Length: 243
Image 1 (cartoon, rainbow, N blue to C red):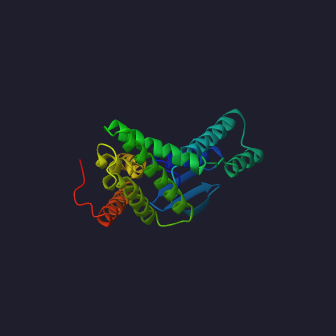
Image 2 (image 1 turned 180 degrees about the horizontal axis):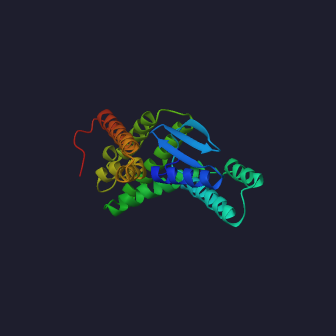
Image 3 (image 1 turned 90 degrees about the vertical axis):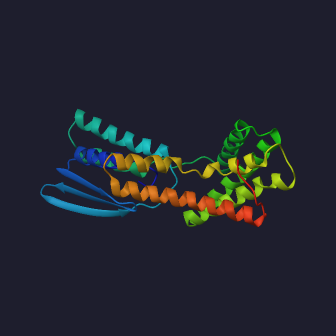
């Protein structure tokens, strides 16, 4: 849940792993910021609740968790449940590979993707270069604020403000053929596409509460990005902007 998995995947993996490890029944209830799990084993019922801390999306971790569940089920099919298997599964979760790409590499590639959008929208090479710098610096800012546990909405506002501020320099120095392209493309890194897709998927699969919660969260992120952009344009006194 912390790293962007669909609700259906979370519930399915929880139930499969519990049954594979000898539980008689597993029930999972999800909220936007918490997870409640109830297991029944030998007529004993255990319920636990865990907070889901907001983290960045990490598909690599989700794949590793799915692989652990698959290996546990395969081992159960080939042999009986043993304490060694349970310990091995627990150790596998403790040793999840949580390494991420270096900050400088993420910033460079995000800047390059924003620059590519600018170029595809008809921007000149100078517009593309400014967009690259704006996107890269904005991503560095977002990662820095996330590492220091800033409120995600405040982090998005600050990131959008800095990206728009750098992109809008094309107005003042008359750089390139269309300054609007630089401003628009430099904030594309803030589009919450993955969470928005997950929210619609959750709603369609019956997890309406968490789907609505995720949708509202993505809309608030979008609104925060708009606030940051407007703040930068007002500060620079740019009256007319847009395609």
